[in-house]
Length: 401
Image 1 (tube, rainbow, N blue to C red):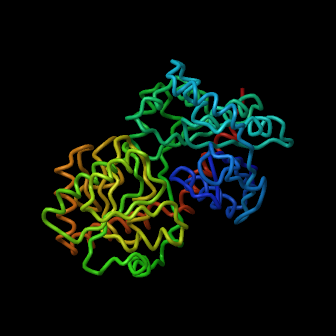
Image 2 (tube, rainbow, N blue to C red):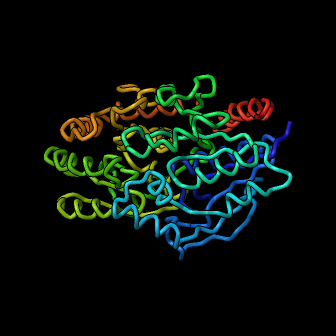
């Protein structure tokens, strides 16, 4: 049976997409190809949601998915951010300050006729999730959420998130560990469905690491450590410090980052002048695949649990990954099988693991290949879409209050 489904996230193509946005995009594409009428509800920003200079058009259709973009009320968002900067003690202010503030999203869901069969949002704590949930609740539409909890971050313990989870028709957890966290927040286990994230494995079948290396003058004997985010909470600063220790043993190391550098990253990077660091900024998806193919190790030792699609992408190019030993990440990254897990902030341990991988190409190949097999077996977006389709059907056919 075909349903009309609204999926809600921050941005969609052609904007550069983060992990949760990719999750929603692949899900939208998979559900559309399964015959459902899919509308993707997003902001109209191409880059950061608070920058009014980078806007996209209101509607378009890509891969059978209708994309509907809503205006962010920048003055309202700026007001809430100001309150947050001055540390106004209010959780709701904190949520709305994370924006984007899109009243059009709320009005669209409430007033659409005929209404959607289900509304599915990802991920908290951005304010649009609250708007989408409130609108679906008012219109008596089943609401599904994929929260992707980062339990090391206080906002993910907000009572507003707890309320959304408690009153949603279904909650989709990426791992059993995330499910356990959600159960401890008081949500009935029967409403939580464990379904991993997926990627389009076909997109990752071909890439040219040689092209990337030649472009930046990286030699065949150079070891490339890729850091897909420069944020402190994702362990980027610790990788920087670890590579100082690595340089005491190996000279030809190159550190590559993707995404806009944070202020802290730029400040800390200036203290490491002996390291060769290439900050790529935002790159196209084709360029990103070349970067992943051209690196030797992907490092993202994040403090809070996150179900990183970057791990899946690195594995598709047979690369080993290093992550932090936090939350249920071990359900995906199996230590000494498809990557390494280290303690967040333990620079010495991180340096030892990087050195181990640099010095053992056969181990890198084994860990990367094991990861690739896991992706092929469990993380094809078409497989994930079918599983989530069954969740939608169960909540759509359930009696509503």
